Length: 92
Image 1 (cartoon, rainbow, N blue to C red):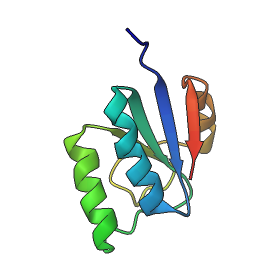
Image 2: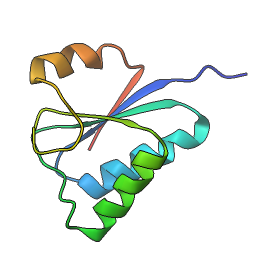
Image 3: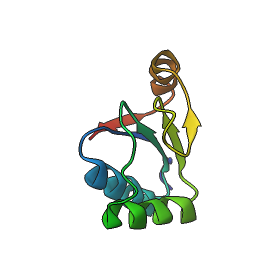
Image 4: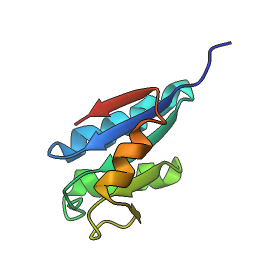
């Protein structure tokens, strides 16, 4: 039996790719959190809206330092401390 990893996906400029990868990483039963950094997710883009529905269905936790996102808002300093909790950090 394999040990589940704790993975953080940092979403910045490539929002669609970051969200897609976040959803795909759940296939191996790893714990995946999404950190949206310095941006607001553009929910007007159909691909992003669809991926956010999948994120919601998968119950992935989403953090952001931008208050315009509908998720837990945390500071950059809190994000830096939080990143120490993860086994793997994937930047997008």
